[in-house]
Image (tube, rainbow, N blue to C red; front, top):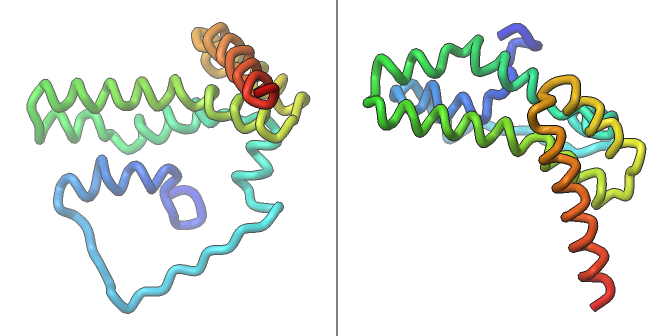
Length: 144
């Protein structure tokens, strides 16, 4: 709970850590206030090409989710969790590439490549290849 009283990555942790153990609550009278604006931190970070892989790895480590599952579930279920985490990490730069291409943000696209090389260099080739493939499909769809 380092970040303003809220855990980073709370959406996924709600499911994988808390709800799976039955530690949930519900208040039918609660109100959630949500708004969208250009100065949202996630939008500003996305525009700068941040891919969040390093943060997600830290969240997973800090949450101790894998060990919690090892204590409560079968090996098969733990392997599914580990596969989900690995796939989620691999898709993060891919999703940012798609975001940049859709917004025609060339500088942001190069920043995604830079951040991918810095945070998870093993995914850089796949990320670059996906950007080429995704852009080609977008162009071909416009030509139809």
